[in-house]
Length: 283
Image 1 (cartoon, rainbow, N blue to C red):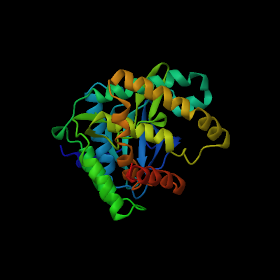
Image 2 (tube, rainbow, N blue to C red):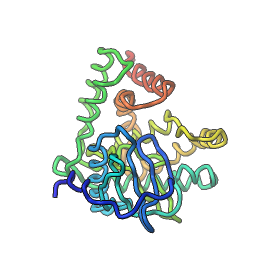
Image 3 (cartoon, one colour):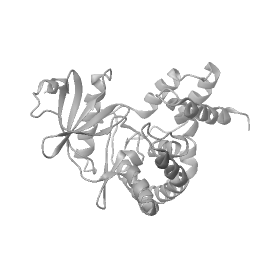
């Protein structure tokens, strides 16, 4: 059955209470043991179709991720039915139980290494990361043509790779249920080199803005633990993966340039542009 035809499956239940709200979607209860991820108005249907497909790929690979069960529509918007998880996001837990910081950071690194031990490639149906980065860099605002050409030249020197990449792994995309961690939100999955994926996580921990709905207390706590979280994540990831820190750092300017094409607060874009420009200055 073509993936798009699954949109015509009738809904078994009306969506229940809203559990979470993000930039791209809303999470609601759906029956007794399932969740419904409803994409926001204006989000292309292809995004939901891809997340469904990538999530199925991750489940089949044996990774700890909630199973996407159906692809539906709700009020003319695409929606995905997922099995329901208990617990809360790692980000929320870092605020509620900051004393678990080092354990959670190491847990995130172990999950990331598990993703990167999963083979992928052109036959996986996932996009090639380097090709996706090239398109984003071309579309990036702020940068001049000369700066883009410099970054693209750097991209060409980096390895392609054939491993599964999540593309957006950070504490808000990990659910903690007891002692088990679950990876969620595969909308940006691709195949490529693990160093690129780990580098994006490092970049987000260094420069990423907090969710829009964050309270002042939430912001203060996260700001204070961010550096410690990054340090423990990076140390654990490098030890388990066998990669060198320099392999991750080589991707930073390329990832920063590509991230400029995403919806981000102005201050974060300025920080990213600074990373790019610093990398292009003569040594």
